[in-house]
Picture 1 (cartoon, helix red, strand yellow):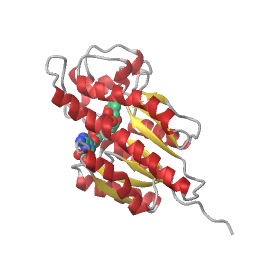
Picture 2 (cartoon, helix red, strand yellow):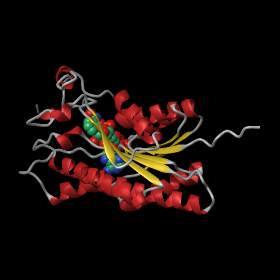
Picture 3 (spheres, rainbow, N blue to C red):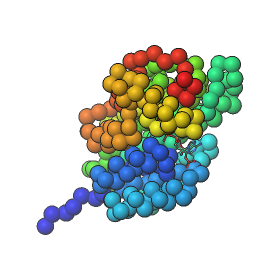
Picture 4 (tube, helix red, strand yellow):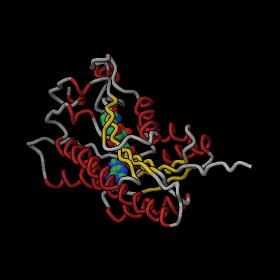
Length: 261
Ligand SMILES: NC(=O)c1ccc[n+]([C@@H]2O[C@H](COP(=O)([O-])OP(=O)(O)OC[C@H]3O[C@@H](n4cnc5c(N)ncnc54)[C@H](OP(=O)(O)O)[C@@H]3O)[C@@H](O)[C@H]2O)c1
């Protein structure tokens, strides 16, 4: 009699809507049980959970505000309590508020660092601790991965969104340090999309025009990004590096952020 392997569980942050939802669905399609994190988008989180459960058999949603360190620290243990284990974390939740060198403040920087840098690091730390506990309990399968969503703009900088960009630059640097510090139990990989989804700041026409602005004539789609996240989670050899999924936008020079071009 063959024993079917236990399903793997992934926590995807900011998974109620937009890119996080696409990542959650791509992973559920691959058989991952998805813990859907959200902050305010409760109804969207319920919808994402229903779609993931249909694909992978089980899913659940978990609310947490990443400006609150205690809430971040409690999140992964809550997911473990629900599913019995966690094997991976995808840090997609992100604050994206505009500031510049002129409007910069400690308050804006701190807000972005809390949600975009501190929370992903604490979740990686918590996954490592959980895998150490599983190893101590004799689980030979206790290996995991963290994927951090970055941004092509780290390689193609402009003066807009100063605090957001600093928080992602710090997360990119943390990726190297964490990959070294948490090995061999945890791999850490960055995935850096180009312009992928539009926002209220862009008309549809403007978005299409900017999306085409790349060496390949197209930036990334949500499916491209989600497929790369799945690849990073499932390829056992990748750690301490970043996959840029942007049609080559990082090779170009933009004077402003897309939303202000
Ligand atoms: N979209 C793009 O074109 C693009 C391009 C380059 C890089 N990226 C990166 O890809 C990732 C996903 O992009 P996206 O456009 O889907 O992101 P998004 O819509 O801007 O934000 C995703 C989610 O983050 C959650 N969030 C924000 N602040 C939070 C906080 N303090 N605590 C907990 N959750 C918080 C929100 O959840 P609730 O709605 O539940 O409050 C939000 O729905 C981000 O890391 C982004 O930097 C995206």
